[in-house]
Length: 229
Ligand SMILES: NC(=O)c1ccc[n+]([C@@H]2O[C@H](COP(=O)([O-])OP(=O)(O)OC[C@H]3O[C@@H](n4cnc5c(N)ncnc54)[C@H](OP(=O)(O)O)[C@@H]3O)[C@@H](O)[C@H]2O)c1
Image (cartoon, rainbow, N blue to C red; front, side, top):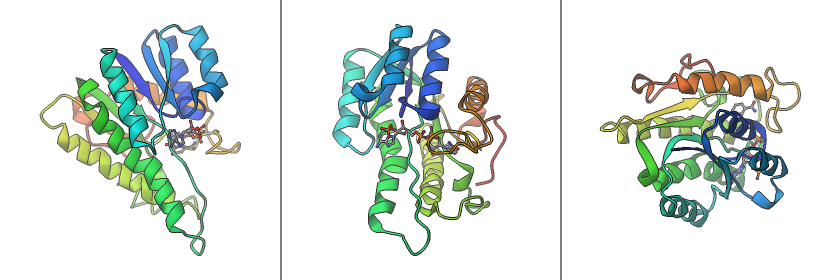
Protein backbone atom coordinates (compact mmCIF):
# COMPACT_ATOMS: atom_id res chain seq x y z
CA UNK A 1 0.00 0.00 0.00
CA UNK A 2 1.31 3.43 -0.84
CA UNK A 3 0.42 7.09 -0.58
CA UNK A 4 0.54 8.89 -3.93
CA UNK A 5 1.16 12.65 -3.99
CA UNK A 6 1.15 15.05 -6.94
CA UNK A 7 3.30 18.20 -6.91
CA UNK A 8 5.52 16.76 -4.19
CA UNK A 9 8.63 18.81 -5.03
CA UNK A 10 7.63 21.94 -3.09
CA UNK A 11 4.98 23.59 -0.95
CA UNK A 12 2.23 21.48 0.59
CA UNK A 13 3.03 18.43 -1.54
CA UNK A 14 6.62 18.27 -0.27
CA UNK A 15 5.46 18.49 3.34
CA UNK A 16 2.83 15.78 2.79
CA UNK A 17 5.63 13.58 1.42
CA UNK A 18 7.86 14.34 4.41
CA UNK A 19 5.13 13.64 7.01
CA UNK A 20 3.91 10.39 5.46
CA UNK A 21 7.44 9.11 4.85
CA UNK A 22 8.32 9.95 8.47
CA UNK A 23 5.31 7.86 9.54
CA UNK A 24 6.99 4.92 7.80
CA UNK A 25 4.51 4.73 4.94
CA UNK A 26 5.43 3.91 1.37
CA UNK A 27 5.19 7.15 -0.57
CA UNK A 28 5.09 7.66 -4.33
CA UNK A 29 6.10 11.31 -4.56
CA UNK A 30 5.51 12.72 -8.03
CA UNK A 31 6.68 15.92 -9.67
CA UNK A 32 7.15 17.32 -13.15
CA UNK A 33 10.95 17.19 -13.18
CA UNK A 34 12.59 14.86 -10.64
CA UNK A 35 16.09 15.89 -11.81
CA UNK A 36 15.47 19.40 -10.42
CA UNK A 37 13.54 18.39 -7.28
CA UNK A 38 16.42 18.90 -4.84
CA UNK A 39 14.41 19.02 -1.59
CA UNK A 40 12.43 15.95 -2.61
CA UNK A 41 15.58 14.06 -3.53
CA UNK A 42 16.93 14.84 -0.04
CA UNK A 43 13.78 13.21 1.37
CA UNK A 44 14.37 10.23 -0.88
CA UNK A 45 17.84 9.80 0.63
CA UNK A 46 16.44 10.10 4.17
CA UNK A 47 13.51 7.71 3.72
CA UNK A 48 13.96 4.48 1.76
CA UNK A 49 10.16 4.05 1.55
CA UNK A 50 9.85 7.17 -0.60
CA UNK A 51 10.15 6.85 -4.36
CA UNK A 52 10.14 9.75 -6.79
CA UNK A 53 8.31 9.48 -10.10
CA UNK A 54 7.77 11.97 -12.95
CA UNK A 55 4.24 13.23 -13.50
CA UNK A 56 2.98 16.19 -15.51
CA UNK A 57 -0.77 16.57 -15.12
CA UNK A 58 -1.09 18.32 -18.47
CA UNK A 59 0.24 15.26 -20.33
CA UNK A 60 -1.97 12.22 -21.00
CA UNK A 61 1.13 10.13 -21.74
CA UNK A 62 2.78 11.13 -18.50
CA UNK A 63 -0.32 10.12 -16.51
CA UNK A 64 -0.83 6.80 -18.27
CA UNK A 65 2.87 5.87 -18.26
CA UNK A 66 3.05 6.32 -14.51
CA UNK A 67 -0.19 4.38 -13.94
CA UNK A 68 1.22 1.50 -16.04
CA UNK A 69 4.53 1.64 -14.21
CA UNK A 70 2.77 1.34 -10.82
CA UNK A 71 0.70 -1.60 -12.06
CA UNK A 72 3.85 -3.35 -13.36
CA UNK A 73 5.45 -2.88 -9.94
CA UNK A 74 2.26 -4.24 -8.24
CA UNK A 75 1.96 -1.02 -6.23
CA UNK A 76 -1.48 -0.37 -4.73
CA UNK A 77 -2.52 3.12 -3.69
CA UNK A 78 -4.63 3.53 -0.59
CA UNK A 79 -4.25 7.32 -0.36
CA UNK A 80 -4.14 9.66 -3.35
CA UNK A 81 -3.36 13.28 -2.55
CA UNK A 82 -4.23 15.26 -5.66
CA UNK A 83 -2.27 18.31 -4.54
CA UNK A 84 -0.65 19.92 -7.58
CA UNK A 85 -2.24 23.10 -8.84
CA UNK A 86 -1.53 26.47 -10.40
CA UNK A 87 -2.83 29.95 -9.76
CA UNK A 88 -2.81 32.50 -12.56
CA UNK A 89 -3.60 36.10 -11.73
CA UNK A 90 -5.81 37.66 -14.37
CA UNK A 91 -8.33 40.34 -13.50
CA UNK A 92 -11.45 40.84 -15.59
CA UNK A 93 -10.15 42.65 -18.67
CA UNK A 94 -7.05 40.43 -18.87
CA UNK A 95 -8.87 37.14 -19.34
CA UNK A 96 -7.62 34.91 -22.13
CA UNK A 97 -8.57 31.50 -23.50
CA UNK A 98 -4.98 30.36 -23.04
CA UNK A 99 -4.90 31.16 -19.30
CA UNK A 100 -8.31 29.65 -18.59
CA UNK A 101 -7.40 26.49 -20.49
CA UNK A 102 -4.01 26.20 -18.79
CA UNK A 103 -5.56 26.47 -15.33
CA UNK A 104 -8.27 23.94 -16.13
CA UNK A 105 -5.78 21.47 -17.65
CA UNK A 106 -3.72 21.38 -14.46
CA UNK A 107 -6.35 21.93 -11.76
CA UNK A 108 -9.31 19.94 -13.09
CA UNK A 109 -8.68 17.79 -16.15
CA UNK A 110 -5.35 16.45 -14.85
CA UNK A 111 -6.80 15.30 -11.50
CA UNK A 112 -9.81 13.76 -13.27
CA UNK A 113 -7.71 11.76 -15.73
CA UNK A 114 -5.26 10.81 -13.02
CA UNK A 115 -8.04 9.34 -10.86
CA UNK A 116 -9.34 7.43 -13.86
CA UNK A 117 -5.91 6.09 -14.88
CA UNK A 118 -5.07 5.06 -11.33
CA UNK A 119 -8.40 3.30 -10.86
CA UNK A 120 -6.92 -0.18 -11.28
CA UNK A 121 -4.22 0.45 -8.65
CA UNK A 122 -6.48 2.24 -6.14
CA UNK A 123 -7.61 -0.07 -3.36
CA UNK A 124 -11.31 -0.68 -2.69
CA UNK A 125 -11.13 1.49 0.42
CA UNK A 126 -8.74 4.13 -0.96
CA UNK A 127 -9.01 7.74 0.17
CA UNK A 128 -8.73 10.44 -2.50
CA UNK A 129 -8.04 13.93 -1.24
CA UNK A 130 -8.28 16.76 -3.76
CA UNK A 131 -6.66 20.01 -2.69
CA UNK A 132 -9.33 22.61 -3.27
CA UNK A 133 -9.76 26.13 -1.94
CA UNK A 134 -12.34 28.34 -0.27
CA UNK A 135 -11.94 30.40 -3.45
CA UNK A 136 -13.83 27.59 -5.20
CA UNK A 137 -16.90 28.05 -3.00
CA UNK A 138 -19.79 29.40 -5.08
CA UNK A 139 -21.42 30.72 -1.92
CA UNK A 140 -18.32 32.66 -0.92
CA UNK A 141 -17.94 33.88 -4.51
CA UNK A 142 -14.16 33.83 -4.59
CA UNK A 143 -14.07 36.36 -1.76
CA UNK A 144 -10.56 37.32 -0.68
CA UNK A 145 -8.95 37.39 -4.09
CA UNK A 146 -9.88 39.89 -6.77
CA UNK A 147 -7.93 38.55 -9.73
CA UNK A 148 -7.93 34.75 -9.48
CA UNK A 149 -10.95 34.11 -11.65
CA UNK A 150 -9.78 31.07 -13.58
CA UNK A 151 -8.39 29.62 -10.35
CA UNK A 152 -11.71 30.04 -8.48
CA UNK A 153 -13.61 28.58 -11.40
CA UNK A 154 -11.21 25.64 -11.59
CA UNK A 155 -11.56 24.82 -7.88
CA UNK A 156 -15.37 24.96 -8.17
CA UNK A 157 -15.06 22.49 -11.05
CA UNK A 158 -12.67 20.34 -9.02
CA UNK A 159 -15.33 20.26 -6.29
CA UNK A 160 -17.82 18.90 -8.79
CA UNK A 161 -15.22 16.30 -9.78
CA UNK A 162 -15.16 15.24 -6.13
CA UNK A 163 -18.93 14.81 -6.15
CA UNK A 164 -18.86 12.93 -9.44
CA UNK A 165 -16.06 10.62 -8.30
CA UNK A 166 -17.92 9.95 -5.06
CA UNK A 167 -20.88 8.89 -7.20
CA UNK A 168 -18.65 6.68 -9.38
CA UNK A 169 -17.31 5.00 -6.25
CA UNK A 170 -20.76 4.43 -4.70
CA UNK A 171 -20.42 0.66 -4.83
CA UNK A 172 -16.96 0.66 -3.22
CA UNK A 173 -15.62 1.80 0.14
CA UNK A 174 -13.56 4.58 -1.41
CA UNK A 175 -13.71 8.02 0.15
CA UNK A 176 -13.18 11.14 -1.94
CA UNK A 177 -13.15 14.67 -0.55
CA UNK A 178 -12.24 18.21 -1.56
CA UNK A 179 -10.08 19.76 1.15
CA UNK A 180 -8.99 23.35 1.60
CA UNK A 181 -5.58 23.68 3.29
CA UNK A 182 -6.33 27.21 4.55
CA UNK A 183 -4.21 30.16 3.46
CA UNK A 184 -0.67 28.81 3.58
CA UNK A 185 2.78 30.38 3.14
CA UNK A 186 3.98 28.62 -0.01
CA UNK A 187 5.10 29.98 -3.37
CA UNK A 188 1.40 30.11 -4.21
CA UNK A 189 0.07 31.48 -0.91
CA UNK A 190 2.87 34.04 -0.38
CA UNK A 191 4.82 34.97 2.72
CA UNK A 192 1.97 36.82 4.44
CA UNK A 193 -0.32 33.78 4.70
CA UNK A 194 -2.04 32.68 7.93
CA UNK A 195 -0.49 29.25 8.23
CA UNK A 196 2.94 27.70 7.82
CA UNK A 197 3.21 24.66 5.57
CA UNK A 198 3.84 22.49 8.63
CA UNK A 199 0.74 23.79 10.47
CA UNK A 200 -1.54 23.27 7.49
CA UNK A 201 -0.29 19.79 6.61
CA UNK A 202 -0.34 18.65 10.23
CA UNK A 203 -4.03 19.61 10.47
CA UNK A 204 -4.85 18.04 7.10
CA UNK A 205 -3.07 14.77 7.92
CA UNK A 206 -5.05 14.45 11.17
CA UNK A 207 -8.26 15.05 9.23
CA UNK A 208 -7.30 12.64 6.43
CA UNK A 209 -6.51 9.89 8.94
CA UNK A 210 -9.94 10.26 10.54
CA UNK A 211 -11.93 10.31 7.26
CA UNK A 212 -14.58 7.61 7.01
CA UNK A 213 -16.94 6.46 4.29
CA UNK A 214 -19.52 8.91 5.70
CA UNK A 215 -17.29 11.79 4.54
CA UNK A 216 -17.27 10.89 0.87
CA UNK A 217 -18.31 13.69 -1.46
CA UNK A 218 -17.70 16.44 1.12
CA UNK A 219 -15.96 19.83 0.75
CA UNK A 220 -14.06 20.40 3.99
CA UNK A 221 -11.45 22.61 5.59
CA UNK A 222 -8.19 21.38 7.11
CA UNK A 223 -9.99 20.37 10.33
CA UNK A 224 -12.78 18.49 8.55
CA UNK A 225 -15.45 21.18 8.94
CA UNK A 226 -17.81 21.60 5.97
CA UNK A 227 -17.24 24.50 3.59
CA UNK A 228 -20.37 25.71 1.77
CA UNK A 229 -20.40 24.70 -1.89
N1 LIG B 1 -1.07 27.90 -0.50
C1 LIG B 1 -2.33 28.23 -0.28
O1 LIG B 1 -2.63 29.20 0.44
C2 LIG B 1 -3.44 27.39 -0.87
C3 LIG B 1 -4.75 27.75 -0.52
C4 LIG B 1 -5.80 26.99 -1.03
C5 LIG B 1 -5.53 25.90 -1.84
N2 LIG B 1 -4.25 25.59 -2.17
C6 LIG B 1 -4.03 24.43 -3.05
O2 LIG B 1 -3.10 23.54 -2.48
C7 LIG B 1 -2.37 22.87 -3.51
C8 LIG B 1 -0.87 23.01 -3.26
O3 LIG B 1 -0.58 24.41 -3.26
P1 LIG B 1 0.84 25.02 -2.84
O4 LIG B 1 0.52 26.26 -2.09
O5 LIG B 1 1.71 23.98 -2.26
O6 LIG B 1 1.36 25.45 -4.29
P2 LIG B 1 2.84 25.64 -4.85
O7 LIG B 1 3.81 25.86 -3.76
O8 LIG B 1 2.73 26.67 -5.93
O9 LIG B 1 3.14 24.19 -5.51
C9 LIG B 1 2.38 23.76 -6.59
C10 LIG B 1 2.82 22.37 -6.99
O10 LIG B 1 2.05 21.96 -8.12
C11 LIG B 1 2.95 21.48 -9.10
N3 LIG B 1 2.42 21.57 -10.46
C12 LIG B 1 2.06 22.68 -11.15
N4 LIG B 1 1.68 22.34 -12.38
C13 LIG B 1 1.80 20.99 -12.49
C14 LIG B 1 1.58 20.05 -13.52
N5 LIG B 1 1.16 20.42 -14.74
N6 LIG B 1 1.81 18.74 -13.28
C15 LIG B 1 2.24 18.34 -12.06
N7 LIG B 1 2.51 19.18 -11.04
C16 LIG B 1 2.29 20.49 -11.27
C17 LIG B 1 4.19 22.35 -8.93
O11 LIG B 1 5.28 21.77 -9.60
P3 LIG B 1 6.45 22.67 -10.30
O12 LIG B 1 7.45 22.97 -9.22
O13 LIG B 1 6.97 21.79 -11.38
O14 LIG B 1 5.80 23.92 -10.82
C18 LIG B 1 4.30 22.33 -7.42
O15 LIG B 1 4.86 21.13 -6.98
C19 LIG B 1 -2.83 23.49 -4.83
O16 LIG B 1 -3.80 22.67 -5.44
C20 LIG B 1 -3.46 24.79 -4.40
O17 LIG B 1 -4.43 25.25 -5.30
C21 LIG B 1 -3.20 26.30 -1.70
